[in-house]
Length: 110
Image 1: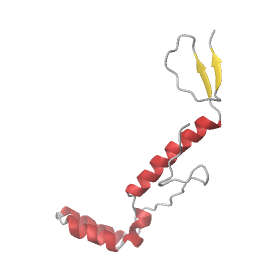
Image 2: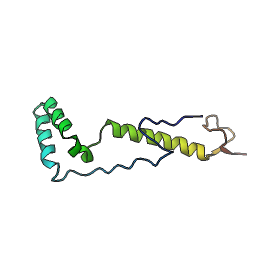
Image 3: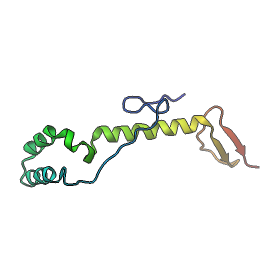
Image 4: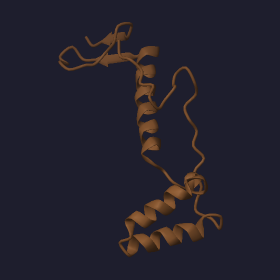
């Protein structure tokens, strides 16, 4: 049986993480402009330091690698959950390639 991933996701034992990202507004606009100016000048280390020192302010406005890994894991866990809950597979008599799990409902062709 396939195992759930739990490094970033607690689904199905807990609900899927809901993210509340925001569009840049007056709270972060000045900071975002400053970061973009540093980047456009090739001052990436200074831009990164500015981002790091303002992580709390910027967090509602940014998507990072942890967010992507959480989404990836939650999609993966949702697929496993959906397949284990009950899956109906319709196949033709001449179909060679089908993917199913024990307990699936098989409805065959003629």
